Length: 264
Image 1 (cartoon, one colour):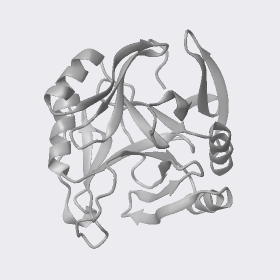
Image 2 (tube, rainbow, N blue to C red):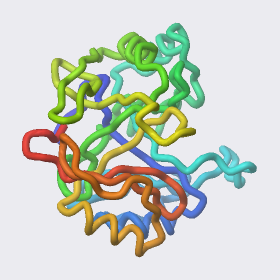
Image 3 (cartoon, rainbow, N blue to C red):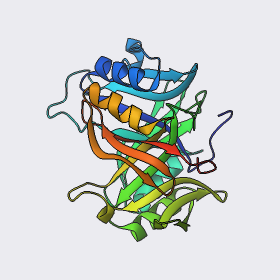
């Protein structure tokens, strides 16, 4: 990726974990990332890279004062949506029934961030780029290829995201898979949305990242050897072959070998 992401497009992901170094080691071994604990002025935030380009962030779970949270927050991947004006977007969030959980805050000269919960309960971030646009490589082995919202109220989610960012929604027909809901920016699909009824019972509203891989079964086996668990074993679906995994600290993510022409 060269240049800024269009508003409404997922542009970055990061992970907050109890054991930061263990997470860096897990994803480095699994996807070929490079990463190390960052300097104190960034709270130790690690920007992981692939082929020298940023792909994801990993940080240690901590309170603003540097202490260990009690209780520990859920270990989850956070998806960030690009915005050109984070303050205006956050006003739209509250006007539309969402909740601002964090921010807005300046991240040095890199940009401004915030974290919110949509009216259906899913947590998502916002990123207004400064000198840092977001993921510098996508749609290749080990890099982000897709982001998907799981929600119990599709109409409410469609209305919310369309009111806070310049995104539209559409329903596409996927061979042998029925309808699939998409978020679109300038007519291009940038993310998906699924009803929680298609997930295991008790799954909370969430955003989940998909990573592109060359061999889903091989990655699944490698993840299990490294202590991960399998939420959905490798299977064929309309967009390709995929699996849903949980890393050793519990963060859930998907891996997919997409069929040609179906990458985001």
